[in-house]
Image 1 (cartoon, rainbow, N blue to C red):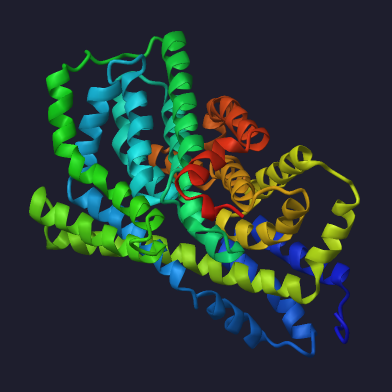
Image 2: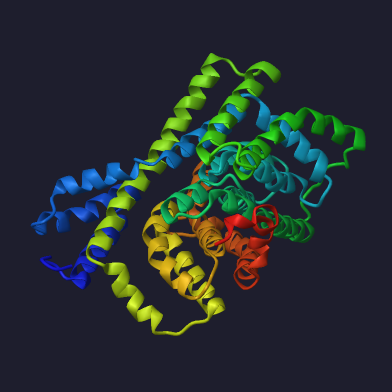
Length: 439
């Protein structure tokens, strides 16, 4: 930029060097992003340390981000209100008789929970408390129990309503309704792949199974669970059919979950509500603080035109849309190992967007390649937040669960490749229900 003291190359070197050094000494990601901006802000005469504050708070001037705490509160109200327990019983009647019954239930409950919370970290924390000790008692290997709990928790960022979809739509101006629809089929494919993986493990290691539930037992569990299962229908349907915005649908979901917990299931008390509010505040503050500092980091990159410098080299490669999709997935897979998904979207997503557009990749297709790729980063070291949460609760070392985790990710890579080479997998439902969402 004319008049700047630092060139784009020097500025990017300082930004990323300071960031990775801070990460290496275990400074939290949100703080590392903000602190990495300070050296440049202090050196550059046209900028000041106050720029960090102003750009961080500018990121919060977004109505769409209000959906984040609302979705988290919906999930927490369901946990304290006994709704999760009812969904657990329904999952048991559906898949408990499959090989590795309890692990199969783990995956299906993650599917249900994903349609409510939108947060993989919340899913990992709640599922670990429910399943890891229970699977130990039934003879499952500890590494398998932790791995399947962590891997199934990533469904929450792919199956709508996903917090990553909300952030992606807000930052990169993509229809959130289209993203909600686009995530359904890849999410269900990942569920099928995870259940098949559990089946293979259960057969090879002789894991236990439950007696098949009768059809009457299934219907009873379904009847009790139907009100809870209506939550994702309200969230997704309200957004798609224009009844609410994404934020309004999240607020309606909070009211619905509260009404279910208090008036229908009648299991929540005042202390439970306070606990739900407290947990929501903790998760939402971490998530949104990351959004703010990542936005300041991204603004500084744009100030020095660093993305343009990076893109000038990549554009010369002459890639078609398939190789571009593979390149995008590779970048997000690598970045996701070191960086939380939200700052990765804000920083890397904005850099890669012009490359995807130049290759004629639909914005919704590009978004799903990015989101599915970033989901892997939640269970891959050194970041691997969901895996670390599960290991912490199970009191296990990360190294002890890596083998099973990596084995479970291999078939999931197949789904990612399918998302890349077969765009209709993600574009079919948006095109069928609301064609105006696409391009």
